[in-house]
Length: 117
Image (spheres, rainbow, N blue to C red):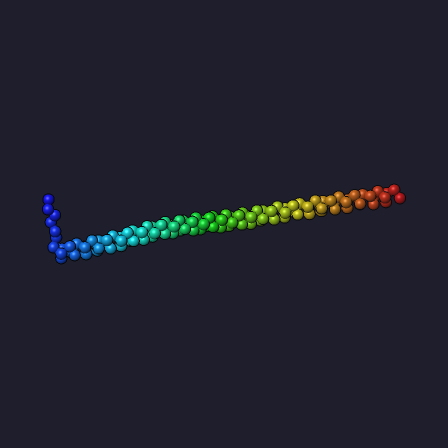
């Protein structure tokens, strides 16, 4: 079997095509690596966004709980103040009753002392 030889310009043309193909393959490989790097960066950014969103939701939840607690605390404080007011009024009423009892006892004692003199 005889090997057929290509004319010299055809060989040069094939060499140029091979060189161009090699160059394009290198560019394609570099582009693929850059795409992989960008994909990794994209996933990292997505994770960071998720983390920030979770933190934002947590802050919102804490703010809602704090507002509710403050509201509840205000309601409890008003209820306690009302309870204290009721107790003060009861104490004043009992104090007046006690003073009335003391005054009656004092009058009886004075009346008793006047009778015994």
